[in-house]
Length: 120
Image (cartoon, rainbow, N blue to C red; front, side, top):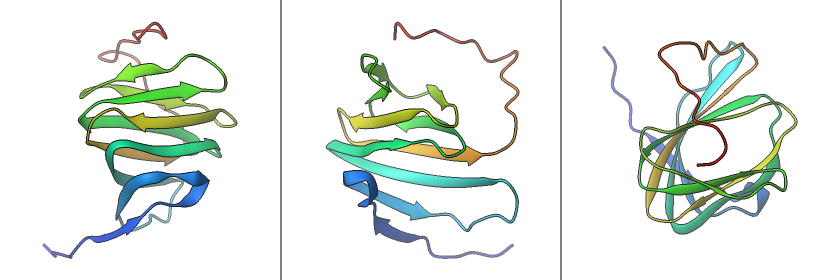
């Protein structure tokens, strides 16, 4: 076992505000993982997904939006999946911690995952 200190830095890309990323070492494969801490009122600014992106809400509450669709609420235990090319943005409605996985691979979203739809 090896222990490392987490490197923490502010996210300022995409006009993001109130977001700090905990650096997770990059992989040599087709996926990357980010832990983001959002202050209430903070946002991961609008940007296009280059690869498939999965956002998992660990704590707090956020709102998410794809393209020009209405914002949807997402709380702890929610996974949001954006496909490559989708414009999207995330807002924190309370202090929140989210995990973002970017991957070129396929996702197995069969059982036990249940899609709840876009109605929130």
